[in-house]
Amino acid sequence: MAAPATRRPGLLLLLAALLLAAPAAATLHPVDYLALQAVRRALSDLPGSSFFSSWDFTGDPCTFAGVSCSGDGRVVTLALGDPRAGAPGLAGALPSASLARLAALSSLSLVPGRVSGNLSPAVAALPSLRFLALSGNLISGDLPSAFSPALRTVDLSKNSFSGRIPSSLLRTRSLRTLVLSHNALSGEIPRTVTSPLVHLDLRNNRLSGSVPALPDTVVYLSLAGNRLSGRVGGVLRRLTRLSFLDLGGNWFSGELPGELFSFRIGYLQLRKNAFSGELRPAGRVPSGATVDLSHNALTGRVPPELATAAAVYLNGNRFAGEVPAEIAAAAEGGRMRVLFLQDNFLTGIAVRGVPSSAAVCAHWNCVSPPPAVVAACPAKGGRGRRRPPAQCGGRRG
Image (cartoon, rainbow, N blue to C red; front, side, top):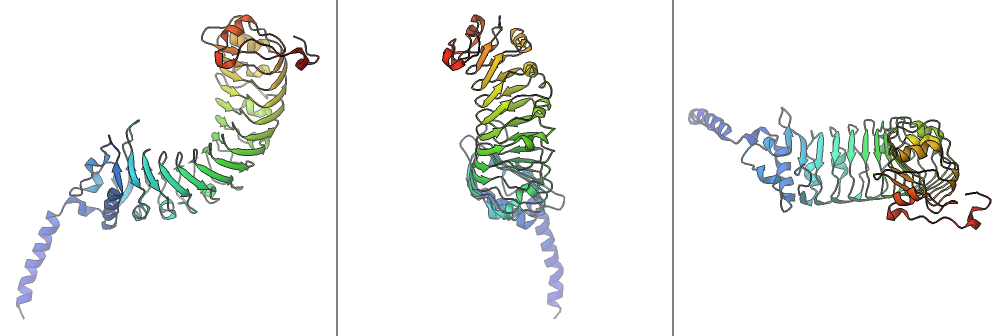
């Protein structure tokens, strides 16, 4: 009966020796260890990439490229792929089931590459996930129906996601940055947006309908290249912190709020819509701004408040009258490097000399453009022809 007792100390010593001899990987939680192994089996380096060269499971996975762990041995950051610009990415199928087992994960990113598959709700809703960026791959299917309430940044751009934007995403209480551009998303933007968004980019999808009320925290807004329609003046008027606005290539209509031009917007892109009425800026546009209102149905006179911009595109509208002296002086002095006025109904274009670095175009108006303007207009801007008198009615020029 004493024999088992005499062997027990030996057994304990053997276990202790095994623990001391085990690789450092034993410090990582077993579930996370197996999850990382599954990630490695699912993904591979594209030619020219060596991202996975450090993923040697005889060592400590917490030292692998792209992996960071907490003090208690849980993976908290997983950055898959070489982040250097132009570096090849990864290929394979997104191992959603394995990623979902990383219960403490707070940051998940994937460099642009050839990774396909779906993004499961189990991954998007990981309770500690704050940063999710999988842009520039081949991930498809619907967006997950649930997202982590801790998320602050979501970038799923340049993939093949389809279906609707889930309403829960725009109600995520901590979400500051949402980038879903360059996908195949359709339907309306959810009507209720309560996330404290600062950066919202939904461009180049198939979204339709009107734009809902957005939080006044928004600084960057891009909805370009969709099928959105209706009036947006009421929405834009509230966004006093805007510094970047791109609504180009939609079907928006109605007048533009004058307050918009006095916001600190460095880039105002509203081209190829159906905006109409006269421009009545509430103040001068920020110095050095780009203002593109081309290819709309805007009428009235060109406002002098645009003279402080560095680039102004008003071509393809119905502006009439004379170009303000302030704008002509800005073009002549080189402070305005681009001034496109072609295809309007202008009757006076008093721009004399233009620096060689500037591009000024004014053909197809109710007056022939001055020789200096003809010479300063690049070939893509057209040349010096004027409208037939019959199109100009009683306008003089």
